[in-house]
Amino acid sequence: PPPTKRPSPSPTPKPTPKPTPVPTALPTKEPTSDPTTNPTRLTSPTPTVKTGCYSNNFKDCLPESYLPFQYCNTVWLPDGAQQDCIALWGDCSNDESSCCGEDTVCFKDGPHTACVPKHVETSAPTSKPSQVRTSSPTSKPSQTPTTSCTICDDIESPWMIDNAIDCAVNNENRMNKQCNKNAKWTQKGWCRLSCYKSGNGYPGDVCCDESLFGRKNLRG
Picture 1: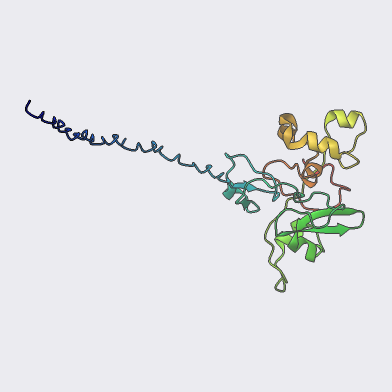
Picture 2: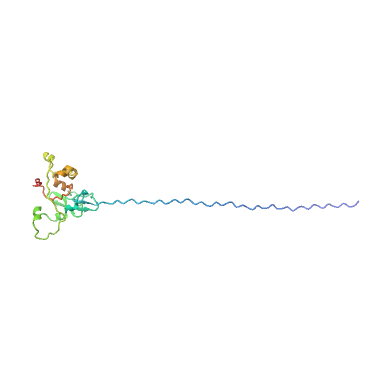
């Protein structure tokens, strides 16, 4: 018989590589900025404006209706009423440097101590004020007076008279509560000199710093 042919092996197919997928980029989020708040404006406190006033004792203000040009002894307080100081003619025996105003000084005359104008402290009167005003000076005074004063009476109220109470004797508390703080006292003018010397004088009063003796009946 004819020879048998050896079978040829079938060719092995070449493997086809799988396609590599293209990587997909993840979407990038747009950054979000933080909201901006409007700055808060700081408000400055309203400054306090001091109001000046007229005074006749370097400490307390006179009423707004008071006409300063009617009296030559009125002074202007640019910062208004003063605190922690002693008014003109007030007792300064406990603190000789506590008088109100630069033109006042604590003056001691025997048992009495009071805040007085500087020109009064430097020279003692040699005669009654009425005689000084009517006579012409023979020489130039060493210091020109800056204020004038009036002789004030010191008459007690009827109740004080009935109870034998003197205006000038141990009545500091009474003067602080009555005088220009009491409408009737202001109208009648009781204890006029003592009220003034205690720093509670009636509007317009500038009383001379003299002895109380013999002055009870000056009101006429």
